Length: 118
Image (cartoon, rainbow, N blue to C red; front, top):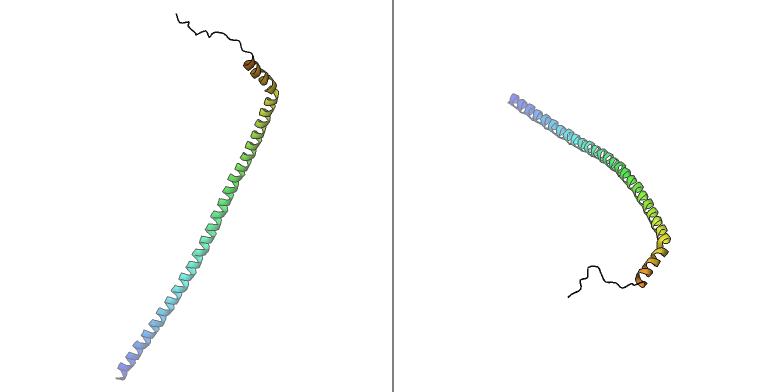
């Protein structure tokens, strides 16, 4: 009976050691999962920061181009307005005279396409 009792004791001890090893393995697995999650989060953050940096660089390049473009358009618009104003002041008096002469100097005559009805 003592050998049976010793065998049972050994089995119980072996079962306890296996249980302890299993718990230790679960703890290591939990730690490793937590570590992997932290590493993944850090990698995602680095990737996100890199992509945001690239986006800001591209946006700066595009917006810089648009800034130059709007300055050119503004300059061209100002130049066109200046030219039109100059042309207006130069031709205004002669155009007013032409309009008044066309309106006031009427010479009645028959239109060349008019056919006299017989």
